[in-house]
Amino acid sequence: MEETNELMQERFRKLGRLREAGIDPYGGPFEVKNLAADVVSRFGELSKEELEARKEEFVLAGRIISFRNFGKTAFSHIQDVSGRIQLYFSKDIIVDNQDLFNNLDIGDIIGAAGMLFRTKTGELTVQISRFTLLSKSLRPLPEKWHGLKDIETRCRQRYVDLIVNPHIKDLFTKRSRLIQAVRNFFNERGFLEVETPMMHQIPGGATARPFRTHHNALGMDLYLRIAPELYLKKLLVGGYDRVYEINKNFRNEGISAKHNPEFTMLEFYVSYKDYTHLMSLTEELIPHLCKEINGDLRVPFGETAEGDPEGELIDFSTPWPRLTMAEAMEHEGVSTSVFESREKALQFAVKKNIDVADTASHGKILDEIFKKKVEPRLIQPTFITEYPVELSPLAKRKKEDPRTVERFELFIGGREIANAFSELNDPIDQKERLQKQVEARAQGDDEANFMDEDFVRALEYGMPPAAGEGIGIDRLFMLLTNTHSIRDVILFPHLRPEK
Image (cartoon, rainbow, N blue to C red):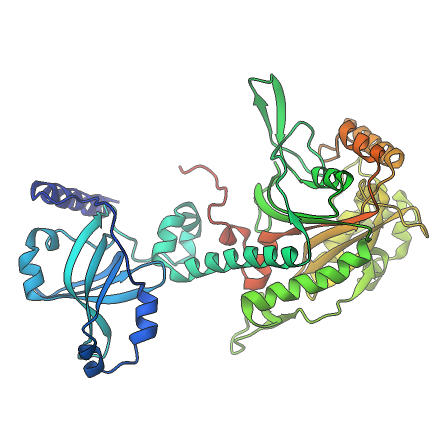
């Protein structure tokens, strides 16, 4: 800490010297004409003689990330959004800009212009003919920023992480490409992208604990969105037949490697289809995104074994297995008797040391058993279908077995990636199920759904048969990039306050 303070004090002294010399340490606009990576890719193979013959000026701007001062000359690397390139300060340029040059530091942002040449070591370099300071850095960049012990600091100070770890910048650029690919996929299939409210009078569309706030002018409490589902289905009532939203959701729950209080979801709805249609659409969507991001349908998963550079692979080739919840449980040694009654499910949970709430329903207990015994083993893409109706208050019942619903969850890499179902469009059944959720909430289930009278009213006008699906963008991106913590795929994840 003392060393850092001394380095900062020296930088403040340099800041003062720049101002005394009449140099603005935080300059104005600078017209950038070239990017480092583009210059290197276009001219990196040219010979020394070919470069000298071009007589072409290049104008770049970026952050100084290395600086070697030899007294009469100096070399530096600057880094822009595309990459890095070397600069050469000749004796003449240093003498003509002595006050500026003497007060430069690693971390400063400069603009520079000059012609290309190749050094004795063969590195493509810009010989500076003019340069200017655009922003003085008052804090030194960390030297050992990539170590495991700095993970929380890297997330908290993502701006520094992006500077010193180019692969992190590449990762988030790839995330942006993923979201654009999602938009292209749905736009090309006739879906309309929409926006729905992020503050709700009634939190609905999911079983989750909401954040609550207060609107002073209206004198009412509001909740941050836990899901956009009910608004999107109201649009189906209104006559749109294919809608999607890439949205932020907020859930006042625990933080883990797979959970952040604020996260990004894709939700899409299509009229006149059922959940089986969405299984097929999902088998189109995710392999397409995998190819767009990685160029391959196979991606590494988990820690790679020593001597095995690829390790375990997830293969997104289709079709994917489709198992009922009961079949998947039985495959992992869970007797189907747990589906017969709450008592038998509870006995199994107790025997296997699976924690369940005293007030947990039969469906909730089955869900906890599934999460502990089955979910971690679903590494390759697998659809799980036929969930208990009490776990799915917004889904349509199966005609063959009214105790279950027309729903699937997609599991990949041992975690849920997508959740979809045939939408319940019977307003009477919907109101009865929401009322049971209200009763569950009264008994202590603070994740149960609220009653939403306006949503029921919308259904009373008539909603066409439809299917809807939600996919967690953060989790999907973690999967496609073999990233192990959700904090590493969110630019600014939520963390505890600094001490």
